[in-house]
Image (tube, rainbow, N blue to C red; front, top):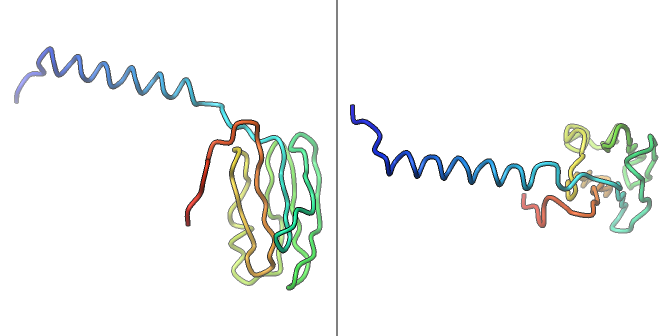
Amino acid sequence: MRRMSLADAAILALGLALTVAAWTAFAGRGAGQTAVVSADGQVVARLPLDRPARLVVPGPLGETVVEVHDGAVRFLSSPCTRQMCVHSGWLRAGGAFAACLPNRVSVRVAALDDRYDSINF
């Protein structure tokens, strides 16, 4: 087994230092401040994430319930069959997004500094 050369050690140390610097610079950024709830493409509510709330949103299939608690938002219940929106869980980071496509309801977390500039599925 070959020993690590001085150049290899320097490159490894530089990479580690850059990783720590990037983590320090970006960690904690993008904390969500508001949940933007839309139905059928129209914004129906802007809920601050620092106050608990529940919102019932009507859709073509029935009522979807959105819940805000402890700085996060989630789909609590929905009349859709697969429940993908409910399984998306709590959304906290700015730019996070979940939708109930069959019921045409979506939730996006807005922040001063969104963590994501786009999301692809």
